[in-house]
Image 1: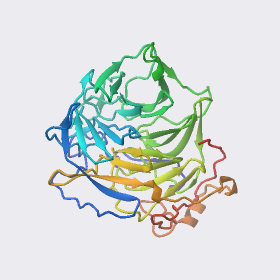
Image 2: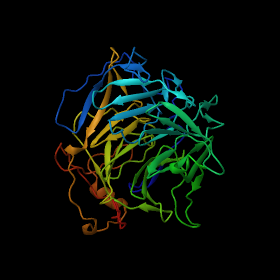
Image 3: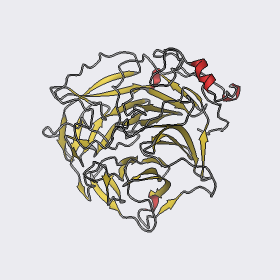
Image 4: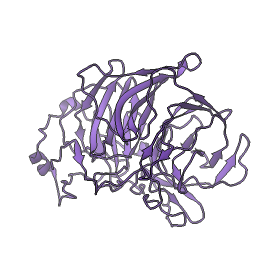
Length: 438
């Protein structure tokens, strides 16, 4: 198979389910399984011990609660609050679909199970979350499954807003046309607008783009369709992808349509309502779904996911928007185990990996999470105009490969960067000619 293929077919026998309905389907470590936290180091990756989870209302924490992890298919906003608070909602935990909301502090590493009131969203798997000022948003997710473990409707198409000050939920009912309820979709905030792309409704996969201006919530909240012009190219329908936004542009990476896994990178220009598939240089990540991403400055960090053969991935890659190049990393500290169904949240220059199929809980209940200090990663100053386009040929793939192929794919010729050294890159595709304003 060509090294440069944007999508790679998987057979039903090799495709592992990712709905996570039973503990047998999920590669969760047991709560008594031993994990050894790493000692502090100067590497970008580090392992953090969170304090035990406590139950709390609006007062100081009182009394222990159930552990938030292991947890799979939950939702977390892409960024922390100004106070360094991270949130985890829903997903699969303790062998059932949950509606719990946990808060993690990056200041004192406390863990709190928040008690909320109002129109609380019910238990759901694979929802999506966003954060605007002091308001948490939850949209989508599946609440029921059929006997085969596949998502089953009806789906909830309401938007749920939580005031972090009062901890009261408000349900916003859709007025007029709008996105159908779904799971395994992607969301991102652009200004005051919540954008939704792709996902799954029963057996149908989607590639529609919708936006809701939160400024309209007090008057007449109406979803707006952002369909491209007839004939314009757009990403194929998919699930398990990631979205990040910068300025008035949205970046999409990866996902799957059930037959193929994707390693493509797309840009959506909001003002022009136009999709463009980026032809980027660098170390293109392998095709995947169920990965997570976080944006720090002009770099999108991507970790994990599930690959073509159904196995979980444990690599960290980065897409630098200003030069449209992909980078890979090796030997940069105690990285998370291979996993999928997790979340990544940025807090300043740090990125936290929360939950997923490899989340660790010690026998004494201690929760382990991983943090990436992006200040310790340096990137080469590469002018994209100075890089000559390369032909996408299998011959080039053979020229840059080293060692025996793994699962039929050639190995990349990549140096092993250390912390505070340059991230490594290997050009394998034609240079991008778009100029991103970031």
